[in-house]
Image 1 (cartoon, rainbow, N blue to C red):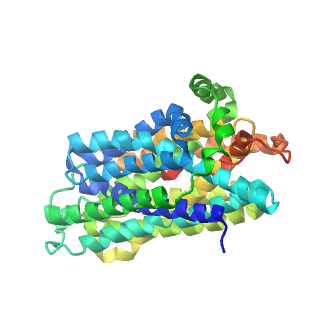
Image 2 (image 1 turned 30 degrees about the vertical axis):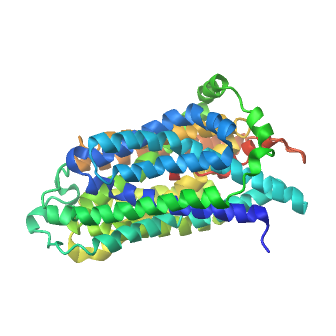
Image 3 (image 1 turned 135 degrees about the vertical axis):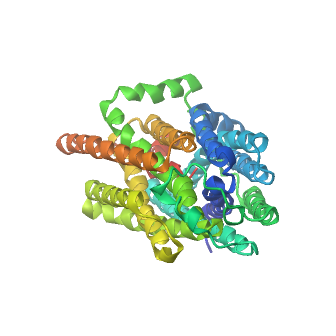
Length: 464
């Protein structure tokens, strides 16, 4: 028989898997499905701008008043609203629902992290084990289940769009505009290849709404409200909004954090490029929108497997070697994308890029989180607030200029940020090598708040 706490971890994991099956699939399709006037990428930009705002003050307010369980349910409802906005996409439906999603995103993830931390501590006390070890195990289970959502959401879109009877061969004239060969600002010329019938789109969005509502139902019915008493101390010890807000920016006095800003923002740039630019200017342009799901499935599978692999490999190779592998992989992909002219005859190549990109992204996410946790072990809450803020800013900037700058220049910008990261990150790593940051001394009796701070480094915020 599994323990009650382990059951709760499975409920949270399955709930997030169901919810992000819908959101992940929609995010991958926005630049192609709602390409008119850049409406899709504009909505994504608004989402991450709203996340920046919500991360500053909403999580403690909602967790204190609703508790973790109902904060998760409320956050999921915000995500489902975005699916409803895509039923009849327009500026008046996508932008408001994007704001709602962004405001609910940060409380959703904060409540999830708090809930798993509380469950791990309870189970550790019950079994006489160290709470941090059980918490690490629970987070590992969560991300193992959660990260497969990229596969299922994109598989759903591909199977449904494959039913489109109006799929036509893409003319050579359009193929000449794919990739970096042309500006790439307006490739939605042939409607039969860039957008399926409205009936199929609504069928897909309806399925996404269904799995989103299922996620809410799973959590509301099967998740125990464990923090009614156990997390009261955590909520009472929450710093006031003004102090939390100022602590986030006060940490910017640390030169190491300033030096890591290019690395953190690059994480947002590279993720937005694959989901916004590669899917539109390479996959949709040369193969059709019905292939986007299959390509992003490849990215999700590679990312998930490599996150599992590199998380364990890091103890033998160190961070620097893994960061170097990620940088070289992205550098090679960017150079190749500048010169490659996508054509349906080179079908396998369309999957090589997301596979390599997924491998690199797995390193960026796992190792950057670990680096922040080590360098700022005494100020983890403020450090990870900065992490979320600067990464989200990278998303916002990349999505904001998506409809105004030609693809070639977007690749140059991505390359420039990568090269800047390659210059600034080693400075911090060299200083850490010469002057290691002393870990926080931990006792056996930690307060709930201290435990939550200690585990911040294993929380991947980039899946919001």
